Image (cartoon, protein in one colour):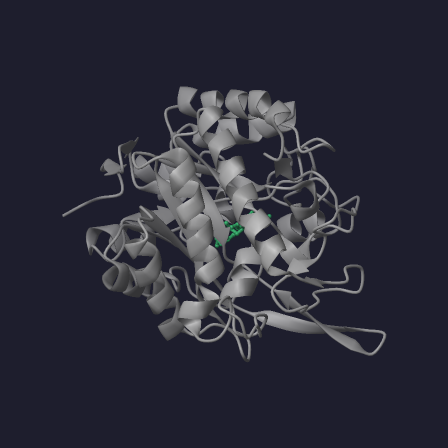
Length: 379
Ligand SMILES: Cc1cc2nc3c(=O)[nH]c(=O)nc-3n(C[C@H](O)[C@H](O)[C@H](O)COP(=O)(O)O)c2cc1C
């Protein structure tokens, strides 16, 4: 029987235990996507006990940023800062992975040729007019993912993760809600996965066989017309067949529509609401593991109580990720591993973390005031 404290090796990358810090956009990066002291500190403090740190969504192009302080790997000059980050995570004993991403039509309105890149012109807000990508633009974007991945490897990260979740660019291709193309990049789930597959292949070609590639996927999109569980299972099988080493299984647990000037825009969430039980994502991740036959990470309110440990012990999933609870209490993984669950300073699920970054401010937390964004209450 595996336990949370057991090590695990993914394509040569050794994790000292099964707890993962999932990607968390902090908005602590510099204006040119650079690593700052605040970034180094945030990750250093949270790398102390976990097995794996997945660094937040890092843009493959400047027009793919989610927030003004998103990290970047769009030019060679960014490698030096990222290598300091990777070294600092490794120095704390955790394996280091960086999530590479393009926000597509959910990007920051900061300009750029691929601002608003999207499969079929689905808009997420009034500020960004989506572009329906041409075949040449798709092909160029695939290359940009691959070049950014090579920079991640050059920076010394132990592996990389492709962001295919939460309605950012790759996820927009995967979802039937946002992909209405009638060429080979659209259609049924398999066709919609073409862009993701091309990115995985191009990345693999650049980084080589022995470099771990993780892929973050939505197990389901709980919005009318969104990706179904069945589609996600099919895509997971395809990705495993393409040599993805592990799947980081997230979801869109809810989404609302907001109206601006008579137009409706989708506002998807990436975290469970307060009324969902801890571990509601575990069965979804377990299903994907069974379908794809490769290691999976489960996520969703796993930072308190025994659900995380049980999920590993019952062999449902291979790793568990703790997001908001690790923002609120950076030592939470150490406390859980040490059998001191009662000492974890609870996350109040107030969503201040999300609210601050969405407002373009440094991430703040009501519980943990020792963050660059403070408690967020002055906002
Ligand atoms: C402030 C914040 C920023 C996030 N940024 C990212 C991100 O950059 N990439 C990503 O894949 N998920 C991101 N997520 C989603 C988390 O990785 C995680 O899946 C989610 O918080 C659910 O886990 P939890 O219930 O343990 O918080 C973010 C979540 C929060 C709270």
